Image (cartoon, rainbow, N blue to C red; front, top):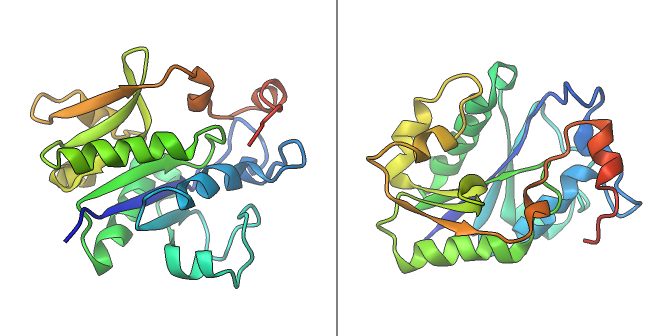
Length: 208
């Protein structure tokens, strides 16, 4: 049996700083913000993707139609009932959904408000883990700082379940009991998350 890596696409944020649901904001008439990163994830080597939402129903930012086979066979959708309490609860909702059917060897956490990520960076994370499944994590690196997207092996699942509030996986990567690798990315734009109207204006020239 091969290595199974399931995507966890976090799209349950409250958009407080944006003032409107940011994932539905159009970017240069090339799609809505929330649709860019999931399109790249669906092109990657992930075996399936769990999309974590704030409420039930397909969001308007998806780059596919409701009856599209891509959604039917590659994606599942879960509501994070406690999303307002912080990112930890969205992450845990995604993890729970990821392990319900068939426990994967790892999850790959992708943030919906990072529209500049590309398929290559996701596949690099997967490939490094496939080459050494004893790793607890494989993270993207921005000048030595671990940032999402990040792959988290099953050895970290119990620790993920113990996170609280707005704690994310980065806290766990600093703990000495976990061994991982960081893959440096030279293009810092890959890590941009759009949180405010000013962010959208500054990074509106998206070329995906």
